[in-house]
Amino acid sequence: MADLPEALGPLLREARARLTAAPVEDPALDARLIVEHFSGTSRTQAIADPELRIDRKAIAAIDTALRRRADGEPVHRILGYREFYGLRLSLSPETLEPRPDTETLVDAILPFVETVAAREGQCRILDLGTGTGAIALALLSAAAGAVATGVDISEEALKTAMGNAEALALAGRFTALHSDWFEKVSGSYHVIAANPPYIPSEDIENLQDEVRDFDPRRALDGGADGLDPYRTIAADAAGFLEPEGRIAVEIGHTQRNEVTDIFRLAGYALAGAFRDLGENDRVLVFQRGKP
Image (tube, rainbow, N blue to C red; front, side, top):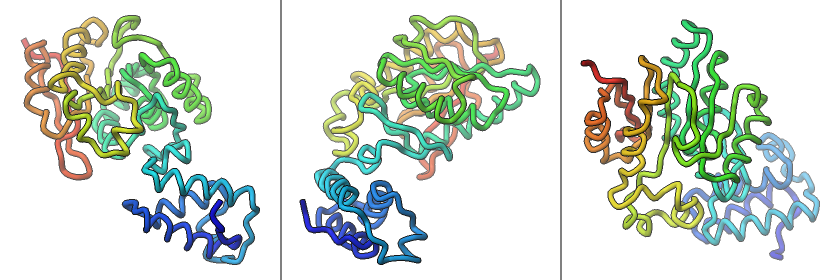
């Protein structure tokens, strides 16, 4: 084990130096997250009491975490959780790490969810490929009249999503369903939402190391052209969507025209297009096409 300082202030400085030398993209932030998480301290404590002593067990855990981060493992994989839409979501190897750009989907569809819930007393949401439950749970947390079913092909992902729902006191409005897309889905929904795999198969190896090596492959690989999941959703959604319902999907930033065409040919009209934090096309919302 490296000889890390026992006082909080010097420990933070040494952690930052190690990650700077690695190098990682944001060494100061990652060092702070690691030290605070494994030592149980806060930013306020680091400022007010930099000589606070940290026990050796915590220092050993910090050392291990710093080594993992220096080797390329994403910091939130090391911590075991990620913040999304103000919620702390636990991660597992079978779940995609939810990212800020996906919050665009929540913002895009939330007004519709609230409107339906106010009008009908309930808004039913189907979250396809739910992973950590990020999209469904963010919508449930923001709209008291919403209920959601999270679908995933991975049993481990569903356990993670259900655990997150329980931790957030949302389990009473969240159902986990093991299904390959719509295979075992029943009922009708006001909203069908998905952040599906949309990377073309041959492009997987060109992704950032932290994505390629640590996000589950089947949560990334969208087939030869990256569009297979959209074809599945567009082809099968009609049997599960309320007449005035909406389908909201995240897309790759170059896929707007192709995805729009897929849904148009299946009988849907574009109801809205939304850009992410980087001003890239990121979310499309569809409704049944007008006759």
